[in-house]
Length: 198
Ligand SMILES: CC(C)(COP(=O)(O)OP(=O)(O)OC[C@H]1O[C@@H](n2cnc3c(N)ncnc32)[C@H](O)[C@@H]1OP(=O)(O)O)[C@@H](O)C(=O)NCCC(=O)NCCS
Image 1 (cartoon, protein in one colour):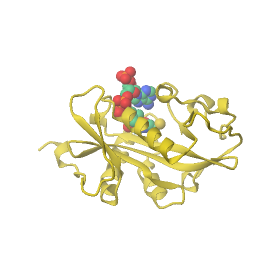
Image 2 (cartoon, rainbow, N blue to C red; image 1 turned 30 degrees about the horizontal axis):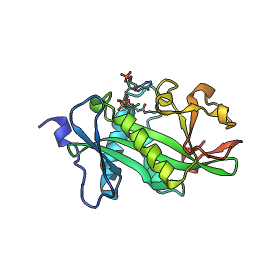
Image 3 (cartoon, rainbow, N blue to C red; image 1 turned 90 degrees about the horizontal axis):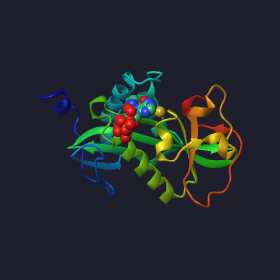
Image 4 (cartoon, rainbow, N blue to C red; image 1 turned 45 degrees about the vertical axis):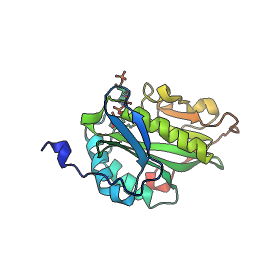
């Protein structure tokens, strides 16, 4: 049995509206669905493993996910899992934040198991997350991350929207996407969920 086979398997019962994707670079099907409480352990291990070899990590991303789930900024519909053959291979979380007095979303963290990377899983999670966020009526989603990765999915430097770059964050890495064509302009400072400690 491979190390992947031994991983905690996900639970396919009671899953609201799972989405079946064809992977962009692989052959197998991928299921994207909302996380349930049965997935928490697997997601904890997945986030820890994904960030263990990440370029930027404080080593606590898995604890951040656990803390955010218990906080006021958590949006259950926007904690999503990617499954490959029943293995939880990827996870994405969007939480509520504010720009000035307006509610927006923050994408963080995004995690894909190292052995499943570069197969389109991160891409599919971002696209599905943005789709659900649009349906829920959110207007903007912010992200701190790679300036070569997130622009592939429509993110632009947040400054272009009038969003202030938080102290200590490189402006080129602090991006936002407008989720609705008719989104009203936002401006001002960003207030993250307190669990981020920013
Ligand atoms: C970043 C991450 C989620 C991407 O997931 P993925 O499933 O491999 O992404 P996709 O397959 O959709 O896209 C792969 C592409 O993104 C690129 N990419 C991956 N991570 C990148 C990064 N940190 N910076 C720039 N490009 C990156 C790959 O080089 C690849 O490019 P290619 O299509 O030209 O070959 C994954 O690498 C991961 O979990 N990394 C560790 C945790 C992390 O850094 N999370 C992001 C925090 S902002």
